[in-house]
Image (cartoon, rainbow, N blue to C red; front, side, top):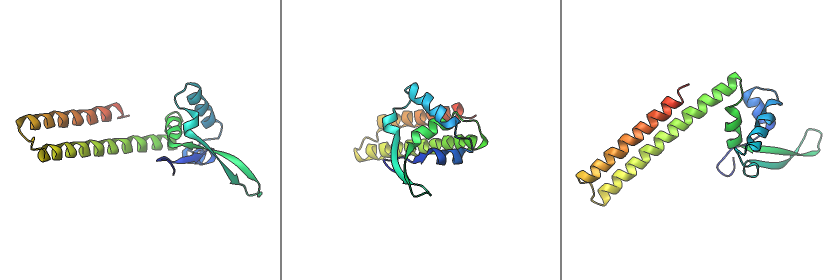
Length: 142
């Protein structure tokens, strides 16, 4: 883990989604050709010593690449990954919204703005946030 992401080699990603090596690079090339991701920010190269004692360059790809490719691969493990990624995103989105609402509520109280107008603003934000989470869940139900 580095720079707030996870870096995986091709071999690690192949093992994770249980697919052959040919499909993943093809999907990656499409991502880079379509400029869906900027290659320089999502690819790192490190030297790795192999079993034969020689040092070889190995490309590592950030979680951004794996998520993008993971949604294109057809395998049971890729389906499990997509379910996990969607569930984790929903959970984190819910936590972020709850924290933002709690901060807003504390700010209202600290600034002595907890009058009917402040409470009305809080209610609108609360309802909007709940609707956004529901909409996200509905859009990602399958």
